Image 1 (cartoon, helix red, strand yellow):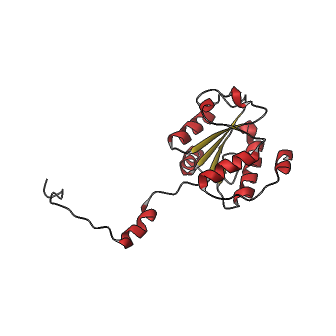
Image 2 (cartoon, helix red, strand yellow):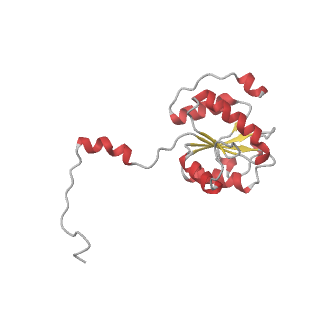
Image 3 (cartoon, rainbow, N blue to C red):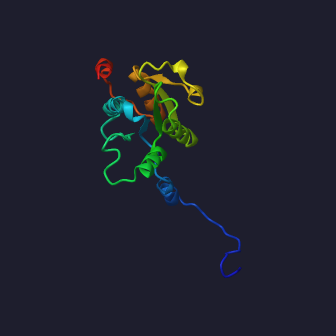
Length: 173
């Protein structure tokens, strides 16, 4: 209908000033890390969170659902988790014998994979990386004991040089 649709030729010129605003017109920038874990592995997730912040700075976003600061009181936790997966550039999936078959772990990993996040399975509790089953077995995994590799993977993805951390102190924690 002519009253509703514009049906004439249309020309647009993008100016340099207009181009300068383009990056700000995009959706929220994805950044930071989402650590997927089961409740029983909360201590491991919190230690990993602390060392990632040491490596990348206190302002580096590391979401851990069992951390009270990641999900504040009164938040709708399901929506908050989904929103934080969407915002994360990297998804670390803590995988153990207990967690590898859990629906949430696989859901969060698959969601991240669908968003083209860097998804890294991280073996915990003596989980051999060869014990992973598909689809996680099809992704290069890391061991929780080798924090340097995890930090290097994150640094490569986000293009930042990390601070040095003490791997021995990390392992003790």
